[in-house]
Amino acid sequence: MGTALRTVVATALLAGLAITPALASAPAFAADGPATAAESGGTLVRTETLADGTVVKIYKLGPARYRADAFARGLPVISIEANARPAAANDNGLFLVLFEDGRTVSWTGNVTYRTPLGLYRLADGTVLELGRNAKGGRVGLQLIENGKGRGFTYTHDPVRTVWTFGKAVVVLAAGGGEFAAYVPGSAEQAPPVHLGPTQQPKPGEPAEIISGPTVTSICTVEEAIRSSFGEGWVVTLTHDVDTGPKAVLRNRGTTVATVDRAHPLDSVHGLKIVGADTLSPRFGQHTNGGDAAPYRWNDFPKIPKGCKKSAPAKPTTPPTTGTGTGTQGGQTSVVPKGGVAAGAEFGSVEQANDTALLASGAGAAVVVAGLGLTALRRRAAARG
Image (cartoon, rainbow, N blue to C red; front, side, top):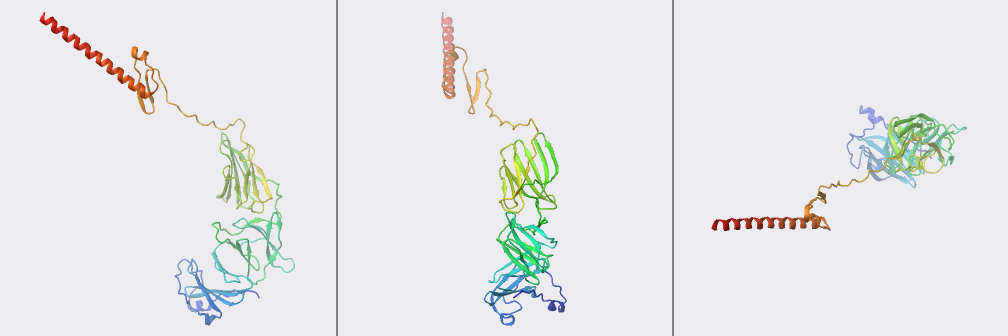
């Protein structure tokens, strides 16, 4: 049985209120809410309060059959029923998905309303093809793996249909025009990105060069190529003689991902560098997500001729002089000169210092002795 979206508006109109997401400022609601299990039918299994303050009550109606009623500021805004299949609703950008086992997933945003047919990439790298059934006119999705489609599944609900591809939860409106995706537990979240028509460039065909190559410094060259993500996406390839190759993926000027010599693979965005430690590296961008073939390959721009890697800096050593004074280990040694110095052999700085002190002491003793001898002679002369 198909699922239905029932947005209750009569109560709000009578109260003179507009139905809005009522999100960030909405207060938390009491567990019993405005409706009871007896009034709505089924057995209340739990009540959830979403991050925006919306309260959701989940009722079990039977085997593999559940209903979720959502309330904002005490007013009912969403009611969906999952009967052997998941169901979804969109309340001004707030998506609520109810599975047939009673689980729920909700998020805000991650939706595109411009949905031409063709290939789309999800935030986790999954690539889907959006197509249309030629007979019935219904839209549907198929998973693309290794360049091949795994078969279309078309919308079956008159409003929205829910799929899961790996961890990604996908919601597609019956007539197209609304395409949303959410990856539970992932820090990477984004609306489905239109990659272009189904007929993609061949895997081995290099991407178009937009600008360059341009020498940005003496031994650094750069060029920009088109990204497989589609319109507005650009990859800048930089090749430097010292730091090696680097590729930066940007969406309308905003950096999204980077690969370089230290991190040559980004499987989420399908970016890879091979030969990162050579002078002829290549950049690959996946046409269908993940890390398996096919890739489109571009050579990094060539480094200008005559460029060589910078030599590593040589360690500096303390200067030495022939003045007899040197510094080693933070200590200063004074090497005696003259006759004492001629016969001195020092095995270490400490020994040299000690010997110098001894030599100085001996010299001082000789001077004192000489002074004493002179004084005795003067006294003898006086007495005589």
